[in-house]
Length: 140
Image (cartoon, rainbow, N blue to C red; front, side, top):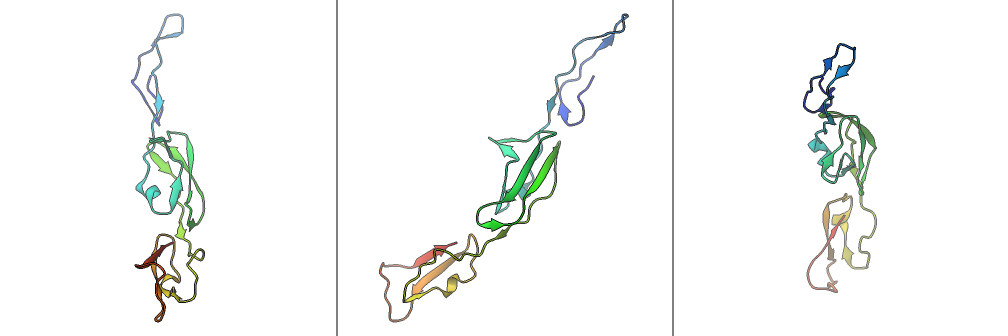
């Protein structure tokens, strides 16, 4: 006897006895884990296909979605060991519109249209001086 597809273990012999019963032990089979594709580690994608450092195993399902600061859909994936079957969501970074320093004398045009993960420089217009020494950078 051998393990079914998606499972692994050592084969075992069973014998048909004269009374019509099989004698012997069945193999001990364990589900095979799925390989997690590198595309699930792309910026903006979150998933639950690996927990505590272990991948989901044959027959299990998991989900992939867009992380905070990104928008897009949710996709369900299925482990058909060793392959994870399904689509990876397309996640686009969100445009930053909140928490930009706002005060008279600030030049903030470098920050227009910045998306998640991008950085811009906020400086003072001519005739204005910084309240704090140095430049101010804002990360979306």
